[in-house]
Image (cartoon, rainbow, N blue to C red; front, side):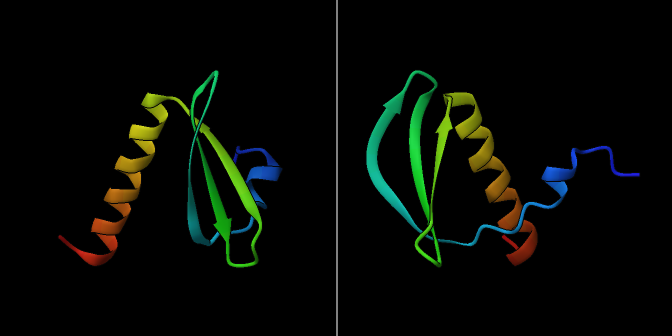
Length: 68
């Protein structure tokens, strides 16, 4: 059985249409605003560590999908 909280299992895909270059910062680090295909915005508050990990995971997923 999946042990993740139900709300995490039911989160729909968020397809990114744009990334706004707003150079914002918060007490957690950098703030990145993503925009989906319907114009809905999602603000990510990332520390240096989480942003590096996110970039690494995206790069690994793209490499697995499309090759080197």
